[in-house]
Image (cartoon, rainbow, N blue to C red; front, side, top):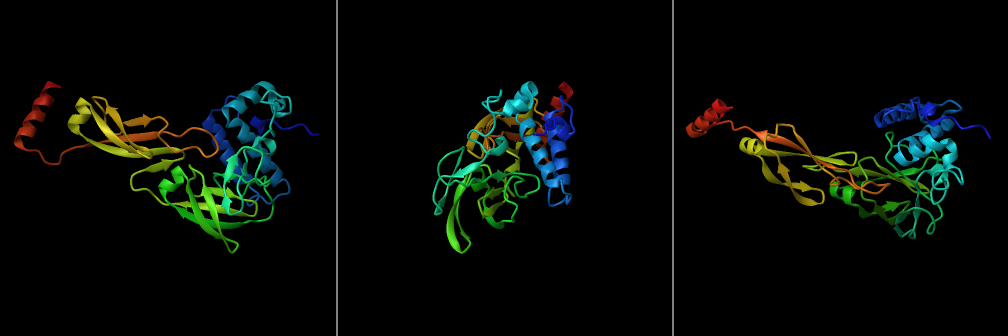
Amino acid sequence: MAEKADYYQTLGVSKGAADAQIKSAYRNLARKHHPDVDKSDGAEKKFKEINEAYQVLSDPQKKAAYDQYGHSAFEPGGGFGGGFGQGQGQGGFRTYTWTGDMGDLGFDMGGGGGFADPFDIFEMVFGQRSPFGRQARLSRYVITITFDEAVHGTQKEIEIEGKRQKIKIPAGVDDGSEIRFSNYIIVCQVSRHPRFVRRGYDIVTEHEISYSKAALGSVEDIETIDGPVKIRIPSGTQPGTQIRLRGKGVSRVSSHGQGDHYVIIRIKVPSKLNRDQKELLEELESLS
């Protein structure tokens, strides 16, 4: 068996490369060598190698194991939990297996039971098929869901190959996310939310406060995707300040935990002032 290429060399980064560098290198190479773009004979193999390298180097635990043991970390009896393939898909990539019948298409992260044919949820930059799946082009069905349904999960009924089927959409899917089944793909089209802006698994909102609250500090009610929470605005807060609410973002589809919620503070400056207000501000300015 030919010796596997070094994952860092595959992505063209140094061993000390930051996460952002690894991600950027992966995206550039994956676009370049995607089988739909690169028609050369070795494109598919190269694309698989790029994805395999990124799956390891983008995961802190797998990366640490690889740095210590190399490729042997993922072989049976290796340094990373007995290697890839135990309860996971080929090469250690997470798969989703059927747990219901065709009338209720549920899934369970992990192995064993249910339908024997797994499918993957991909949030890839291309919105294309898995490089590890079948070569035949699969039918795509677009399903429109609301922002709330995307972040919390939902169940939808859709006509597939002439039959009405119930499809479970997991919490955390994004606009353009694809759910790959054995013989078709569901593409999620997510409606925009009037207040929440999504950046990956993070949520960003803006919150306006008065000039006096910015100067003196205050306690504010903030609406998150899971309901209202109270936050403290420190005294002396400047316009554009970002306050991070840990774990108040979107659930991660293929792993545990949630993203964060970032609140951007906007300060409302009055356009008109009465005489007393002007005098108070002038007095404040003279004291500063």
